[in-house]
Length: 112
Image 1 (cartoon, rainbow, N blue to C red):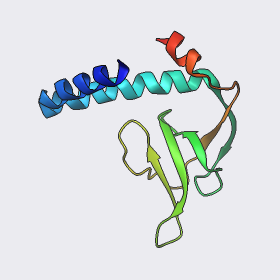
Image 2: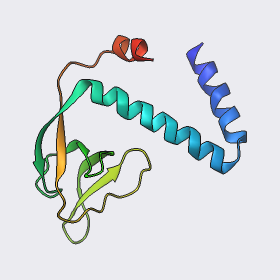
Image 3: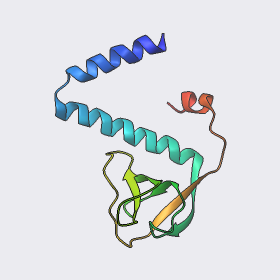
Image 4: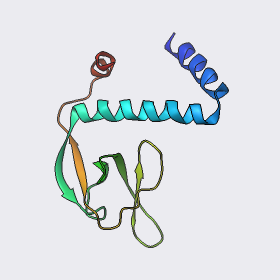
């Protein structure tokens, strides 16, 4: 049942104009960020280079993700979750996040 609903929702989404699709995706990302922050807290500020791999908050409080990968110049690859853009913040501090409670599927269902 869920798969068929997801397929129908995806078909409907692809019929929308590009600007409308982007708006829907931005709202979904914002809701996702709110859900994530229910289970995570800040455990330190680091430069992007020093920050552990995983979720982080950017200086303007966007949810980001630092990967284990580095570019050709040896700089860490990190991305803004909402937009998928590379995170380019120079030496500004980021806030590393750690999970405070185990995430259970039931918790996400009741969050909506």
